[in-house]
Length: 82
View 1 (spheres, rainbow, N blue to C red):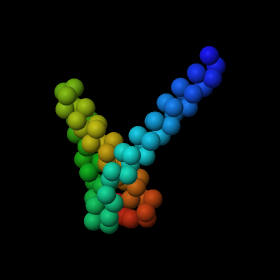
View 2 (tube, helix red, strand yellow):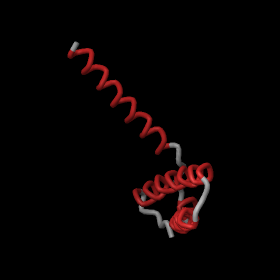
View 3 (cartoon, helix red, strand yellow):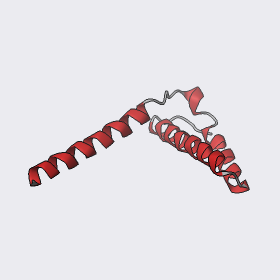
View 4 (cartoon, rainbow, N blue to C red):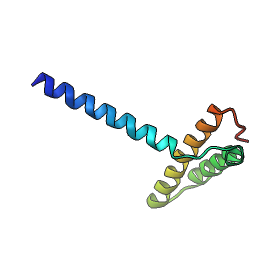
């Protein structure tokens, strides 16, 4: 029983790592795609602070997560995000 539990946990963790790696590698990074990322993030934050309906908020939060991943990838390659 312990072996099955261990194998299941190992499988789930490896699957989660694979999914996380897959989503960050989907973003195409170049200097032109990195310019203005900070401004887009700030614009989304201001929209979120201004108020929103639930459905619109979820869309904006998904965009915000994607932009943050893009910003991280840009900074990792030392591209400017301003």
